Amino acid sequence: MSDQSSHPTPHSNPAQLAPTNSPTRVAVASFIGTAIEFFDFYVFATAAALVIGPTFFPHDSSTAQTLNAFLTFGIAFLARPIGSALFGHFGDRIGRKSTLVASLLVMGISTTLIGFLPGYDSIGTLAPILLCVLRFGQGIGLGGEWGGAALLATENAPAGKRAWFGMFPQLGPSIGFLLANGLFFGLALSLSDEQFKSWGWRIPFVLSAVLVIVGLYVRLKLHESPVFMAAVKHKEQVKFPIATIFSRHFKPVLQGSLAMVVCYALFYISTVFSLSYGVKNLHFTKPEFLGLLCLAVVFMGLATPISAWASDKWGRKPVLMLGALCAFLSGFAMQPLLGSGSTLLVALFLIIELFLMGFTFGPMGALLPEIFPTAVRYTGASISYNIGGIIGASIAPFIAQMLVERGGLSWVGYYVSAAALLSFIAVTSMRETRDVAL
Image 1 (cartoon, rainbow, N blue to C red):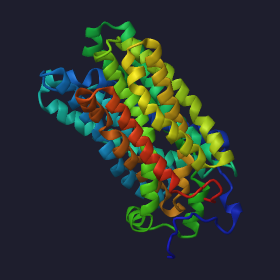
Image 2 (tube, rainbow, N blue to C red):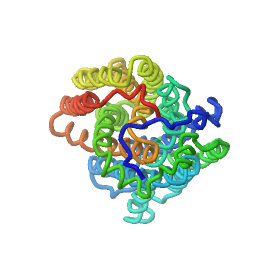
Image 3 (spheres, rainbow, N blue to C red):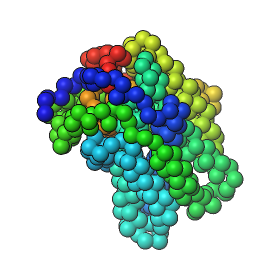
Image 4 (cartoon, rainbow, N blue to C red):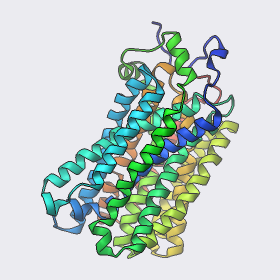
């Protein structure tokens, strides 16, 4: 088999690449799967900021419980590259469709079981151990989800609209977060604090099972990607995609991973850390701050299609460089806006950060698949996406909590600016991929 270049090339017969799934079906299937997966993932993120510490860890200081909860939150990010390698292997070997179904099942089962897990008062140290195992399972499932959904969208996209179609899985996090936070918001309003901490927080985890069934139904109706089928026909598959990725395509993996860092830092500092800080330090009530986040994430959802459309029109690089530059400047706004404690200024801060997250996130659904050839595209895109998560998000709330304890909110803002600068440099070093054929 000939050496696979990091520059994807078109097959000799374009007719073989005619889409077999309707545009509507592709958009719905790529969107609904990521929305469900990220709903599951963010349910834990919200719970980590509110109840995971006191429920699953020894009753020592509240700061120690918060740090333990954030460390447990970070476990999933360490698992995600493993999920990328595992599901990427099968996605590149046997197909996108069946792999996406399997990733959804792993995430759904892990999330639902967390909803039934006894706390520290009931089973002692076994509680945090089992929680970590299930959180690891969530990471495995999500590690295989995003890359497959992005490929499902981009490999079925019409010419010139790859970023627009790649935007649909990118909307999944916005909707998933809105559903998760909206549900917690409703529970916090309708239940007493004691009811919420005792059993109310478990409801979103258990409801995940229903959403997963819906997602499975939609995905089982899909046909396999025509680009993948053409690769199979031409015998372009490789035995060990993960080995090929790191031996032949390490540069795009590194570039793609670092390009993703700003997205993760913006999101998890703005949501998980800010929620915890707002409730504990600024004395917002849970419903108040959750309501502000629900408002702000709408702007993230609006920014995603705007930047995807712009990247189809002007290219991936200029849009992402602009987003990273604005994110760099936004870090300096954290202290004066979030630190003010003013509802209006805190809302403004969250809107700015989540808008920029959506703006930098929108083109990624097309960019990461575009920098890898078909034979290793699932693995490459997934690995890059999730290594970016380890760097930009896995311990971001933990580090932010440590920084705010030692140096104040300004230091957390500098952390966001540093993440943005890293992504800006990575994007600058990349080639433009808007017109590359898959």
